[in-house]
Amino acid sequence: MEMKNVVSIRNAVALLILIVLVVLPFVMSGYVVSLVASILAAGVLAGSWNLMAGFTGYVSFGHQAFFGLGAYGTAILVTSLNLGEGSLFYSILFGGIVSAAVAFAFGYLAFILRGPYFSILTLGFSEFLYVIMVNTPWFGGAEGLNLPPVYVLPKYYMVCLVLFVASFIFFYWMRQSKFGFALSTIRQDEDAAESSGVATLRYKIVALTVSAIFPGLIGGAYVWYITYIDAVAAFNPHVAVQMIAITMFGGLGTVVGPMIGAFFFVILSELLWSSMPELYLVVLGITIIFVIEFFPRGIVVRAMEALKTEVV
Amino acid sequence: MENLLQVLIYSIFLGGIYCIAAVGLNLIFGVMKVINFSHGELVMLGAYFAFWIWKFTGITPYVSMVAVFIILALIGFLIYRIVKKFEDNPDFELLSLVLTFGFAIVVTNLVRYFWTSRFRGVFLIMKSFEVYEMTISTARFLPFACGLLITIALFIYLKKSYVGMALRAVSQDAEAAQLMGVSKTNAFLISLGLGCGLAGVAGALFSTIYAVYPEMGFSFTLLAFCIVVLAGLGNFKGVLIASFVLAIAEGMTGFALGSGWKPFATYFIIIIALLVRGWYWRQR
Image 1: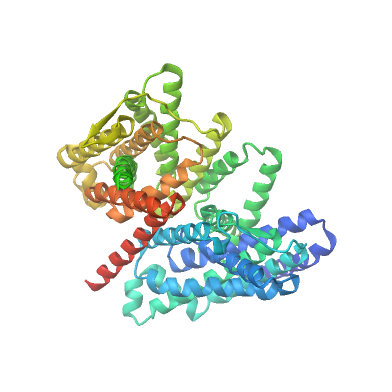
Image 2: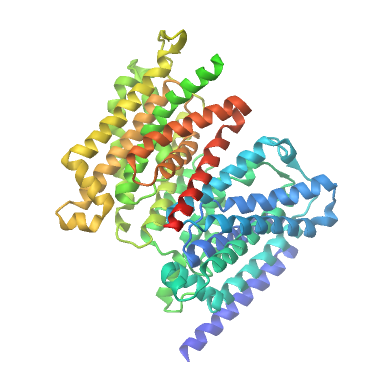
């Protein structure tokens, strides 16, 4: 009886949050909308990283590559074909496909490795792409690529919201699916999983591809939003580190952890940024250290344990 | 042709500095299994300390690097305080990564806040000498010589001394080493102290030839990671070879394609080396 109550309260809260998020762009100022959009985007990015690190046990240090590939895929399509605002959704989709295709191919090679070697390979891969992009004129070189300067904040917000909801539903479904169980066996003991007949390589490649689609789409939408991309912004290792920090903040291997972590992390960055611009990164770093020291499993897991509910 | 030889020699000299930075990271990773994401920031701090000592007292980094080593070793103990709580946590690797990343952000931005983003450098006036009709600047040769000597001294220390043996024992099997009466805490403290101190020394030597600025840390972290991975985690002789291989590859690529392509060689070699390594493991 009690469990049922908790579940229905949780569903009601989720529904309420969804309604607020849908209504928000119609009633709030541009600043709030862009802030919430960056929370949603950060949540999707962190959730994608969590799919590899938290659910599959493969820690990627180079997930910014998939964000960057999506951004570049979209930007190159738009600039080389001289497309206008009407192509927004198709071009974002194209960015996501580029990112997923590269992830699929990369997975075949990369999953020969495990543990820290895999992690460093992802970082090397991302930096490799960065060096190519920044030195090749066709990719805009060091100057980057400019998109048509259009105001797309409402559309950007919508894309972020759709991706946020889609990724949430996907991760929530995945937990109880055969796919999710397969990933969980890989995380716990890959050799045992393989010898019990789990097609580990196939599952890992699917997981990596999925965890690359979402950042790719976010990257594509981001390019439209800021109307400009260069290699430094697209392949910045701090993007991956932010995904890691947010996920650890919220709770590794949980569905809602990265999403709630993103909320706290982005709000905290914004508050610090506006109150003390010179020292904001110092305080942010100290906060990361303290949160990990006191809540190593994440604030969400801690809160759920305190409320005695099932950890989602 | 002469230019090429010059580039080759200076790349080898740079390799000597890479070597000390990477050997420290390798020591920490080998013994503690901690991924020290702030390693490059420690190199940067070492460079700044050497610069300030030179600026105010005129003592050259070759002397002050002893002081820099001690200061950075103390900072290493501070890092130990931060990560200590999670020693036995199954997610130790990941937690320490995030913690040291947080530490790296704090250090970079404190340095930028107090010492600004200006490019700094230690200017030492030294004569150059000639070998086989090649002019070689002493200012570039000395850091290389120091780096090589320190690295070799560290190898001998790890190989021959009792402490070195204990460190190697912990890096091979921490539990078994503890059963044999090796204190894990002491091993961790010594490896962090040595590793971070050496990062500082690398920075001090670096400051005598190249510009010092707050953001230089991250590229050093990446580079040290690459060297350690190429060498094999915990393999010390490999570090020596890998640093020179990477430094030469960087120099040659920069010479052939322009300096923007320098890191291309590093990452290309890393990716190929890792894949070959993985393929080789799979075959066995």
